[in-house]
Length: 245
Figure (cartoon, rainbow, N blue to C red):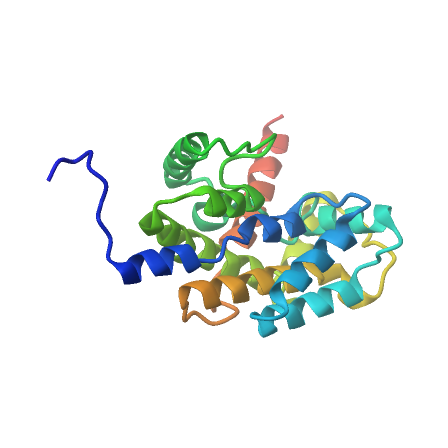
């Protein structure tokens, strides 16, 4: 058969492809930096999921219950505290999986090619940024590649990210940051549980992914945290550089 000829699929395969959910772009909205309409976008995600994804819907109910909907600045501070400055986790999936290892560079190069191939604009973020990957999922037509992204990249990374919000890891991360910076950035003035509300958003996404792709992993993944190790490692490097300087 000519390599350029289309693959002929049987009726069952065509049915499975046509029925595959294409809702990851909608889910990506939950992990963008919040704007004034952020609560409405999360509610839109919940409305989309409520009929078929009960576990994900429960997680989003908890997220919305904790979300300070009437205070944009606080919503933005919660996002920053979760994923940016002295962060709990990172949304850069390749970093979660590989840290600074060369394998992340290879992954970024491959992902850049896929993003370009479907005209997925990554904006100012890298190719492995979680919202960019989720939007890529909806644009791809190669079902094998979609499954690879789900099983080999998104699922294990999400488990690690969720694990970063556990009390033990949070304490160690705070201790590492406090040792380095002598102080911790104050958490936004919200109820205690709201400081880790993005755990619920990540868990909601994982429940959707698990249902769509029949994943069998459990939450959280019980192994050491590469991201936590990287925080300590970066602090050590900076300390050594300051000592030399």
